[in-house]
Image 1 (tube, rainbow over the protein chains, first blue to last red):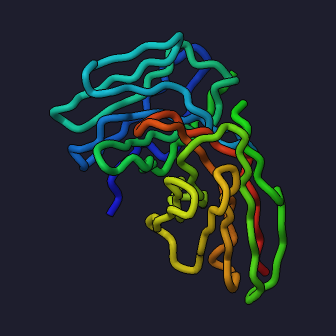
Image 2: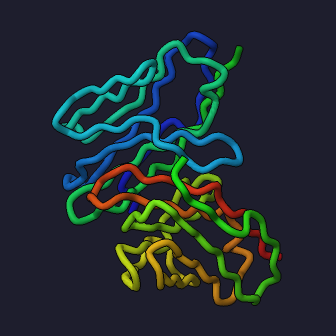
Length: 112
Length: 113
């Protein structure tokens, strides 16, 4: 059972464009939703996270939008740069299940 | 960077041999995790620990065992390696509270031939 579904699997964006990655979850007990960024040969690193008491969180060019009723959340990367090219994972945890459950990842390529 | 060290970073082993991967942390974090990463599957939890000698299974635990005798060390053992266990293995740690940031190690690339 996949508790966090992520799409698209891959994404190609031109420099300066907006990258959008979507995730949907099933477990209503989830209350922590982080996004991780992973570069080749490296471990994932936390990019930005949100809790369901807010509908949006912005940090620089990165924004999480959260829709609790739809059980969906998304990552928006504004003014995408070639240096943003990486694999992005959404994740969720909450309640007694403090372990992070990850989506399958999105490979983002930003062309110069 | 969080103080997490995985060893070895690369290993090639033969089918049927035992293999132990080590994760060492200097952050005194309570929770430690082992994930495997495979193309098309993302990160899948193998085992995790919520304290010394306290461990539990994740979603893909078959064929793996773990031990945590000290706060700082979390060992992952493949009792008899199989080709399906060829993967990149990541250790992660997280702090005292639930639902806090998890920090990942650099990964161990394991090839079973």
